[in-house]
Image (tube, rainbow, N blue to C red; front, top):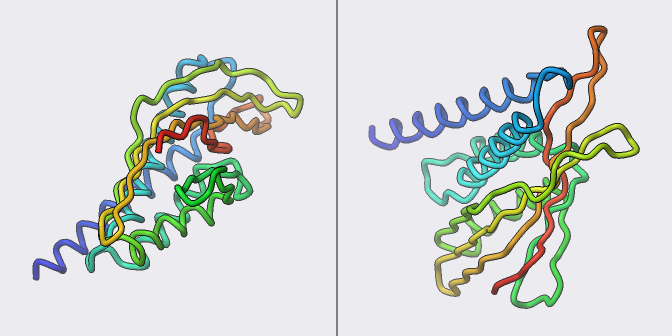
Length: 196
């Protein structure tokens, strides 16, 4: 009975996250009606949504189903401007960061929690904008967010690190009869400082 209640709670939480992501993703904003500050708030919300999905992926218990993890991957991918966005990851065995496409990165995170470590924790903190939105030649606007990420893997071979990362924030223009609207998306995530 307890397992059923926990499974129901997990599914409901994922459904709420998915619904809020869907609402946010479909909400378009006219460029002349919203300030850069409002876009920045929405970008921070997207980064928080990414962390929420990562928390589902790193759960290593019987109450988090494969279906819930697959849904978390799909919803996390939708936060990005496209599936070709790159996420850099580090390791003590490699001197340079490894570049993974966003879906590959998310699946790898789930694998680490299921096969490599007994418990995985990923936390973002000190999240702030280091640039304002600037128009690119392709008509999209871009800004950069800096954050610290702490990764902890517990088990037979424990591992922990803290890295500084930059995240591209992209405003994707969408043409409508009433004008141009912008949707906030995540871009590439790069490592700027490796503190391991």
